[in-house]
Image (tube, rainbow, N blue to C red; front, side):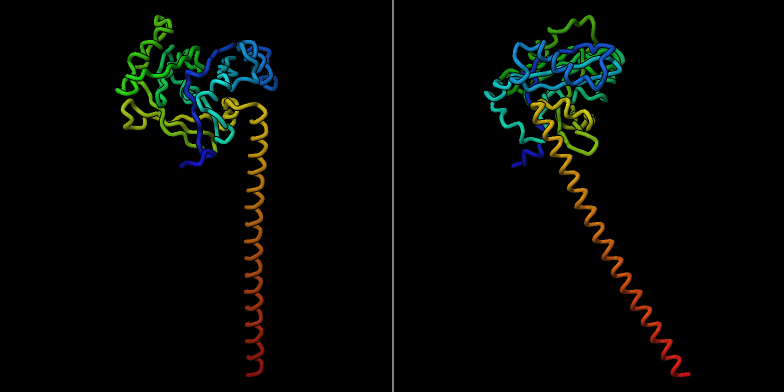
Length: 272
């Protein structure tokens, strides 16, 4: 079985409520987190302590997407011990990559399927924060037949279709891979046969979108930073040991070389 600490967990999107909000023009980046938490508290009928929530932000567009799920509901569906995973996101997280959302030069609705969860997201032109995003689970019949038309139609009915074009593709979520620059999400074609693209959630923004508690994320960031520091110290110590060994070998070699040359000089003197 896979080590959960290596797994990027994606929780079905239909368990989350999502709301795009406008950021005040006077709001500075240093004040962003407490302001967003206050907004989530305002939007939610439950205290934020009872939620697993995260956000995506575009400061140039002054937009933010808040998404949250009731913790008790997640536990009821066996989404427990989220702290053991590498990351925990909603299943639609790859649609929130800046690479993805900025591609549309006209208002567009697109679809993403992850396992049996289908998400429809509406993007304004050249803004990676969707204006609307909804998810629903496929029906049992669709899940069995490998179709999604019923759920797709239900999701489309939630949008004003006069305002948007519809992307004809339905992307399927592929592998999520952790790398130094962030998490790379693969999108597959509808038949799961070919990789269509890979989009990246930047390393600097991963914790914003992670839906685990703020206290856990703060402690985990400190732990991982300390772990990286320890590894760097171990590597530095190893490099220093190798350097000292090379110096010692080099010194020994030069010393032997000098003794050899000196011996040859004495031998030459005796022969003369």
